Image (cartoon, rainbow, N blue to C red; front, side, top):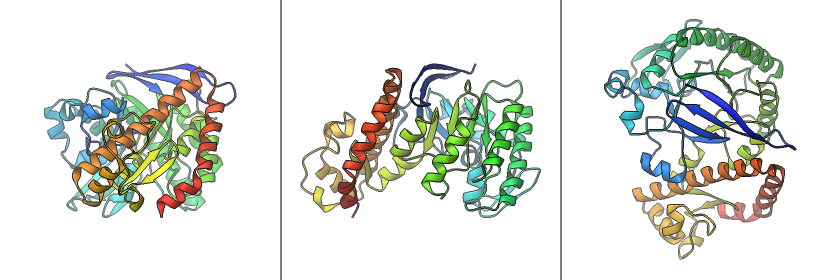
Length: 378
């Protein structure tokens, strides 16, 4: 049911295009997955997601397990019918959310014991249970349970967490054997290249449908994030999809696509929209800025999203300053559309073997408008 096909390559970078074939449809890569943590991409309907160009979304095991729970999702035979989304869904295993959200948690070889951030109830998430929950959800792509560590972390912390992540990956693979969804292993190892190499060797030895680069974009310097992405991506199997988790800004996406990544997810387009930060070809617009009070122009005159076709900066600023719910919807439509269009433009550039030229133009445009962005942010 799952297959990955490479369709084009850039001759001057490692960028490539491909197609993910899943039981709920095919997805062109490189692809950005909006985050639909609790079976919803905040403020948007599934129909609006499709109109912005979204073809695959990310949901989360931790959140859906706690609320509404597998019993409720099971009444609908899975999350697709529950949320009225017909396209593919990738589910994160919940490891990061336990680390970042749980009131208390304790990691052991058996799994992660934690207290719910909702009501304080006690739970144990084992690798086997993480698979069972994702199977109940009806994921198209499941992620192995991994042991997440803070930044900064010592080498000993990173090594111990990696050993646990590898052992859990074997248990996830065993539990998922014979089931329909794809299963991805997650490369951990902190900021240590030799540990990341150990992770890659172990995970590829176990064998997965695809591989994710985890443990990045957690507070480390941007240059280090790029270096470790490059290190991991060029060592992962060329024939498998490569997913960089939790990334990122438009600049991050362009840079890491050039390194050979196929899949991304991040809360930035939706979270920033709710905070009035809107992405454009020439930088970020802070819609709360007083300069837009009487501005009759759209967010981006080159953008063809529903918001830009119909509404001015003045109106969007009014909605945002008045805390009207429509502000979050219109801002999110624009930001998600921007991300989808950026990925579409990159795919087209790769197919024309013009990705290096696209990247140079993208970077120059950002640098040329850097001053305006800094002023707008003030």
